[in-house]
Length: 308
Ligand SMILES: Cc1ncc(COP(=O)(O)O)c(C=O)c1O
Picture 1 (tube, rainbow, N blue to C red):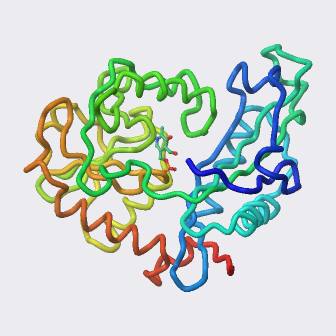
Picture 2: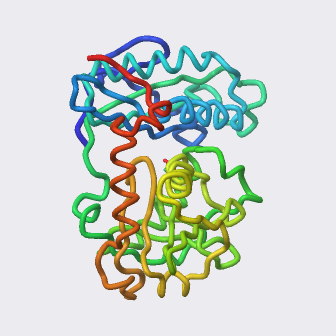
Picture 3: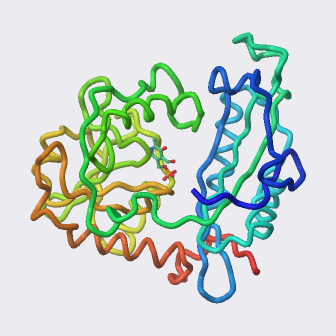
């Protein structure tokens, strides 16, 4: 990942190399941090746009509240901080990473109830291309992990908390040789990939696991459901999915801020469809690309426009 030049750190822009934390920081030991992944895009007209910024920042504030962090910055202040990061780093196509983390080095207890204000916020940003590299175009090979997705009865899964991600990281370590890993929920239904939600096309309909399948209800998932229904007129059904329904699907694709809309062409050695990215997948991929770059008037309200 290419480094950015400046990081917004507790209200100020500092050089990338100066944004440091202590080795005894609480968050390093227990994953007590909330974060977001946001993308910005160049429109090709001297303007950079951030996609669904307020939705990401609202989820960020919610994730922070789950960790007991008291509010220090309003939505307007956080939005302004992200805009500063985009401008300071001269981002066109880029990735923005806000993180709020308990940074005290003098308390390593588990009870944070008296420490709700002892956190820092950092926002980094860097130029970014395709998360899944070549697989974005030709389709990913995916393997099911032996590890199950964290349960919604253990943690509030609609928050993006750093500690949860050891589940994805350990699952991903078992996927050597493939592009991505798929996790099942504890009941054996399809949940999601290590960093993406999943969709299936069968007989012209779109299916995706419901929130009760222990997924992170992604902002890209929400975007794709809306675009499929409103623009393409494709019906979307949220239902529990068996792995075998994926193996015999016509098309499968993954969605997420980083991965955008990425086709899947093989799961556990089963070829999906004819082994090439499917027609509906391609239409959604193209439409998503147009929407995030501000080419579709109807969805311009999702964009925060930053003039260079
Ligand atoms: C585990 C997981 N699921 C799904 C997603 C997709 O979420 P979003 O579309 O909000 O980026 C992500 C990425 O943030 C993720 O980490």
